[in-house]
Length: 84
Image (cartoon, rainbow, N blue to C red):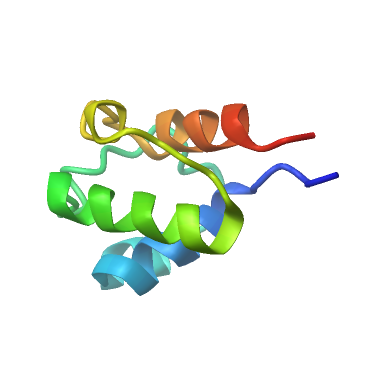
């Protein structure tokens, strides 16, 4: 049984995949924060999807990952795919 990912765990994965001091410094309720405003583009999201697949077994198709606009949307997408 897998536990759901938290926004802090997801933020850590994004930072390790694509860097970003701005996002590393954000804490609290950041679910509605725009990924583009933080400098994350589709390439960074695809790298994040690859890491999620390898490290957590979470598969997110490229077509879906590039449509994500906020951390909250990405977190929902991830948690929808985690086997509970």
